[in-house]
Amino acid sequence: MTKTAHWALISVLALAVLCALTLPAGTTTAAPAAQDDFTEIFNGKDLSGWEGDPRLWSVEDGAIRGETTEEKEADGNTFLIWQGGTLKNFVLKLKFRVEEGNSGVQYRSSVEDQWRVVGYQAEVDNQLGDVGELYDEGKRAHLARVGQFTIIGDDGNRQQIGQVASKNHLEEAGYYQPGEWNEYTIIARGNHLAQYINGYQTVEVIDNDPDSRAMEGVLALQLHAGPPMAVEYKDIRVRQLDQDYGEAFRLFNGKNLEGWTCPIEGAEEAWNVKDGAITTTGSPVGYIRTTDKYTNYVLRLQYRHITEGNGGVLLRVHGEDKVWPRSMEAQGWSTNVGDIFHIGGFPMKTDPERTHGRRTQKLHDDLERPIGNWNNYEIYVNGGNLHIYLNRVLQNYAEECKVVPGHIGLQSEGSRMQFRNIVLIPIESPEQD
Image (cartoon, rainbow, N blue to C red):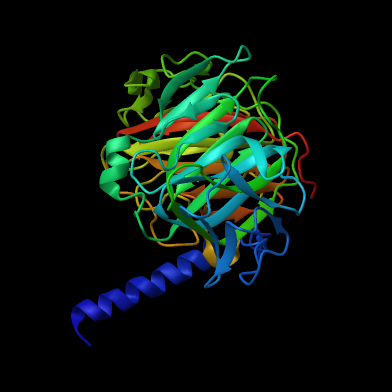
């Protein structure tokens, strides 16, 4: 054995001993949070459970196919409607492929006439630039173009308040592959809507218009009127969410730190607002937190590292304001995002095989995009359960977390970082332990 190998072995053994000594007392194996409990709603064989113009819709090679020709024209936009009921709060996944023309995925829609629906539509197109936008078929038209974060006011006025991504960056990243199979993910919770293609977020909308928004409705697939076209769909699956959600709102207004405070003297020097994002220099060490407290919610935000280093998101912060306060931390350390730290003895149960001292390591390898690119962090704090998603993949979970109202904090801990599009969706029917 070489000297290098010898010392490597010693290091591994030392780490194993240290982990054994620091494993928190009472830590038990937590069952993996459900992430694959989707229901298939297309059987891949025929159109059982779906209804539409039989001249235009069929099943070929395991996919639903909608097609118009010069001989078989659509009498206006026509739809294949799922007969399995309505969708309220849900995550929908499906794959689509367009040969020619324009299509869409209707959700929370209403049936206006035979094979005709109106309502929210996730745009499907065979060209870059439009596919991924949110359209309101037969009602309000464009709600969010590709890359936009919009808020629709209670008066119906639409305001773009930020970007979820640069349209040019999405196109350069290849978010959509024309002529190939692409995957849509559509998430609806209360008045909050988000859409992704191949893992890239394309739009985000908070719809506060009580007269025009839809909180529940049918699912359908569109075949557009006009020149001959063909579109295919497969692997259609849905997970209905049991929770009731309150009105989603922004925790950060994109302009200043109203609603936030820096409780650590001198640490305020690390924080400012730049280009519509909360920005930290990483030094001095400390944190900012919301002035209000929250208990059960979905927290959504985008973050990016400007430099490598540490940071994080603090949850259910309570007790003395100090470095660091009693809380749960969703780690923001570059290459380790998704780890959990329980700070100040915050009660929770995690997987002992991944827990070393205060740290519970993430489930998967690093899923962050390169330094300087925006990432999506989505954190469920629901009753005694904590689920952490990074770029739409479950990275960690904990159970029996202490249920207590607490602040939400952002850490300054060595890395230059930015945070934007910080949204809280209240959960009004929390899970019980």
